[in-house]
Image (cartoon, rainbow over all chains, first blue to last red; front, top):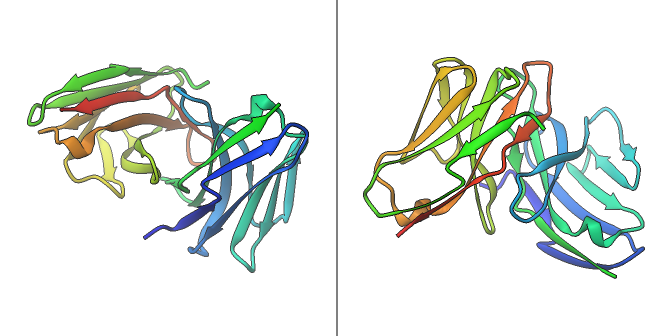
Length: 113
Length: 113
């Protein structure tokens, strides 16, 4: 059972454009929603994260939009650059000691110059 | 960077042989995780540890065992490797209950032939 569904599977955006990746979750107990960025041959690295008590969080060109009622959250990359080309994973977890992250299936983003 | 070192980084092994992957961390993080990454599946949790000698199963634990005899080391063992265990394995760590950020190592590429 896929608890976190991510779309699209791949995305091509022109330099300067907006990249949008969407995720939907099922478990209403989830209370932490991070996005990870992964370059080829490397491990995932935390990009930005949000908790359900806010609807939006922005860090530089990266913004998370969160819709609690719809159980959806999305990543927006403004002014996309070729250096943003990577695989992006959304994830979710519930609070508590173990904090096990459940990941989406990933989105391969290619930003064309 | 949470000072996570995985070894070996690449390994080719034969079906039926035992394999051990090692994760070493230098940040004294309490929690450690093993994930596997496969196309179309994202990252899936195999096992995790919440302290020395305290471990538990994740969502894809069949065929795998783990041990943690020291805070800094978390070992993943494939008792009898199968072709379905060909994957990229990532170790991850988290500071403690109040820290949400999970840091990933660089990955171990395992091919079972």
